[in-house]
Image 1 (cartoon, rainbow, N blue to C red):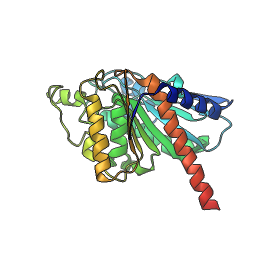
Image 2: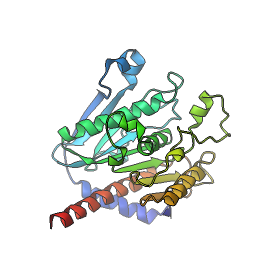
Image 3: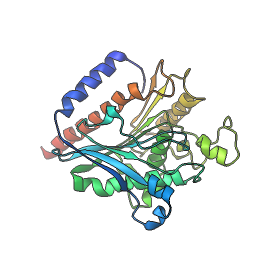
Image 4: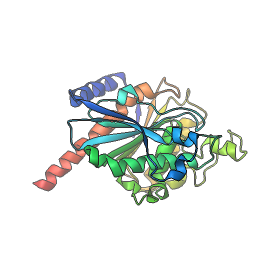
Length: 283
């Protein structure tokens, strides 16, 4: 399903989310270590990067969680709490991870995976619903989102089935092997590679719901829309039942502002579908 950017749609979505969130108190905790072993905190850089922040509702039980992974080409960026995703009735987890050239692939995937595993193992104690954990990110964060959710081996390290992720929401993420990883191998940016470190390598029919959002193909980074369109097409071909592709016309790579309402809409619709299913089962 491919949708064009529609201002009226976004306004309606934002209004609906505002109604849903209502008034609530939130608890914020910062710089939580997501690895359990001391090896990954052996140096100052790792101690700085291998942490996450969390903001969760105090008086809501069974809340959904959005794990947000920042962008920056796997070479820059810091954990952030996007205001558009904050205090909307959900928990927001913001992830830091180690970056190139301080580390090489696949360390960034390992770090992001460890953070997601921490959420699965801990969010229930804070009142969250482990069946409503969504993973999202922009650019490099979108790439990591897709890698964690499509290549099951990463979360399997923690005995977690990647299919338990409620949804993958990638904002302008690479679906071929990331350009920084190609650079580490001495491959030029304009030479596309699809190998085991490419989300496209791991298309499968039983993956979590996958929502791909990009900017306008005419304003995006080189080939970014086309990569996502290819992943969308291949997921449909293998029989995946819940892959969507959104192209936000008029926006370039920095398309998070119009994309966030779509993220929240998909989260809200997933929650609604779960409630309706539970009601049917209980009848």
